[in-house]
Figure 1 (cartoon, helix red, strand yellow):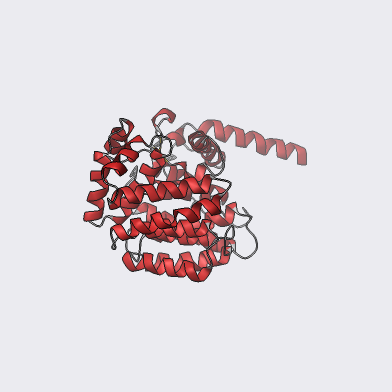
Figure 2 (cartoon, rainbow, N blue to C red):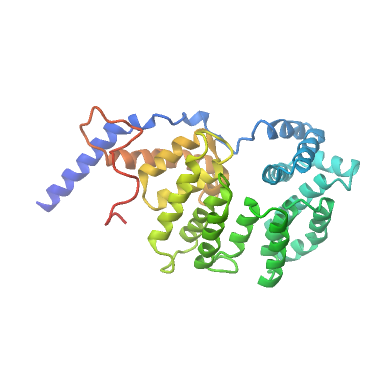
Length: 350
């Protein structure tokens, strides 16, 4: 009887998956429409020009963000330009030669140098050599918090102690108290993989989220702590309730942005990963709909050498999980609502 019931459950699960999976594709773009790390309408032209060896559009873009104190955009654009320069840096070399003291070229050079240092087996030694370049970028515009975010990343790679790190953190938040990138850098330093613990991560992330400005991505910082916990061994020090609370807060932040908005795309991708690990399948499916075509390398590059392929495979897997839990016969089912139950796992499901 036990074997018969197990077989029956398996057959019902397969029938539900076959019946419901296609309907759950509603709101999801086709695989060939999904883009990885797609630039926004401002960054795109600068990258196209850089591919031609022209630096002027990138210089103008970063100057605009600096002059208008768009620190979040400035940070993102500097990181993306540095990523591009890792493989094609002719434009950056020419920019530096034309204006070696430009605070914007100094910023991209500092970000690129830190990234290259991180990739080397001689990481600590190479990163220590980058310190003066970061300070030059910081001196280029005393109001800019982005060089201090780079300094925080640099400090993590050079075994900087807590006291010195706190001094760098004070410099960063003095310039922009709610800067998302600086908060992420601090959270990484405090992670169990580096110089802190899972509990320290949450103890830092949760108050920061409470103090964040409305609409700020810092409000989703606890889900970064949850990601670190789930990917760095876990342990008993963080209860499931704290992970769920972090996911719930990030869901609320995600809901404050329009669907298929590229700005919160990385947070939505990260949140989806956490929801999948928590087996909150319906919530994960909703985030996949909100992501639309904007897949991001992080966090999928942490688990696969093919982040886009991993993202698309995960989309299919989430649909299958949701489909297997839906009623076999329900012609009035709205695929946007799932089975009518919340996405949170019920007692005993985890």
